[in-house]
Amino acid sequence: MAYPILNQADAGEIFVRLYLYGISHTLWDMANRDSQRAVGAFSKAVSLEVKGLMARHGITQTAFAAALDRNQGYISERVNGIKAFDTDELDIFAGLIGITGQDLLTTVSRRIYEDSLPANVTVGGFGQDRQDRYARAADEWTDTEDNGEDTE
Image 1 (cartoon, rainbow, N blue to C red):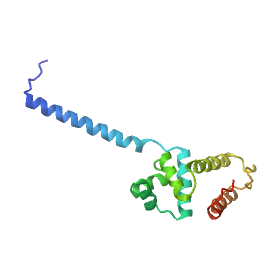
Image 2: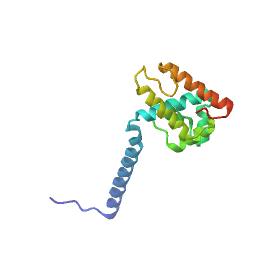
Image 3: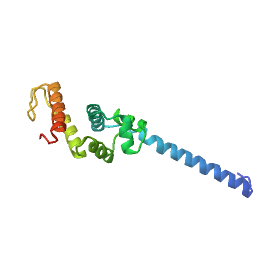
């Protein structure tokens, strides 16, 4: 098979088109990689906890976004469990409400653990009913905020 002979201009144009085609597909793949990756159960639990704490402390998505130097849409995706928070973002959020990122993640871990237990098991002084456990946990957060002390 005979290949056509290209002059330098044609070869340059073909190279540029293939190069740009490759970059555009690489960028598209990179941009869609995060959106295609499923968010895990722990990340969703963290999002739910952050959403509840934002409501409890009167922090808007816009205010949280400003603290992270991001836009509101970025925060919305994370608060609604579409994408996961990273630990630096959680540290900043925790600082906004006066706790540490470690405290936040410990609370989420404890709630996941408690939810995995049978309904008749009591853990850490919480009652048998899940709603009761959540109500007491909410009171614990409120007490911590009011007293400025850690209740654990």
